[in-house]
Image 1 (cartoon, helix red, strand yellow):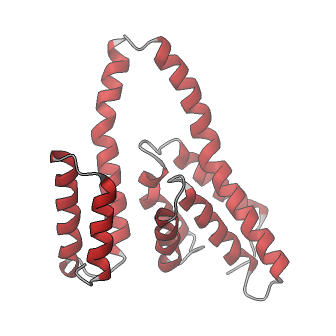
Image 2 (tube, one colour):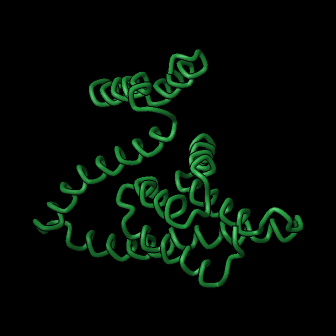
Image 3 (cartoon, helix red, strand yellow):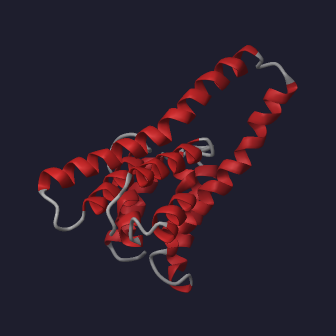
Amino acid sequence: MTTFTGADWLALFVHFASLSLLAVGGAITTVPAMHRYLVTDRMWLTNSEFTTAIALAQAAPGPNVLFIALLGWQVGLNAAGAGASTAHTMSMAAVGMGIAMLGILLPSTTLTFLAARWGHQNRELRAVRAFKQAMAPIVIALLIATGWILVSGQGSAAGLWPLWLLAGISALAVWKTRIHLLWLLAFGAAAGALGWV
């Protein structure tokens, strides 16, 4: 990996800031764009580093946006290089994490605050009600794209039918029943531990 310049850090910030404004339904919905930028275009992360960071952050308790911090941390570790001192490596990782988090949080937080104030003041307008209803299918499509990116790195599509079946059954269970999500997560973990998926 080449040494990061100020322009590289600025590009990372600008990319995450632009994704922040597209993160309808949460930052996780922008994973396909992040993958394209960090793995395919810039090659700052490997596919394995990318999917591992997301999986680790999603498994940990806490806010959903933690995966951004891990992606930034990993970019910073890679930017430090293999021969760097521990202090330099940790400082670069912290810079990467800070830039990624600031980029993803600052624009969307500011926009959300301003839009929520305006939307609350104008909640009876037909346009406001229509906007809220129109966002649901967009969020669902973005979440499906995120799932596709995360699963497609795991092998061939034909060999992944058990995962897709489990995902479909889980979606139906959430939609048609009142089963708590933790039970579905526990079933998925057990299915994975037993090697069924």
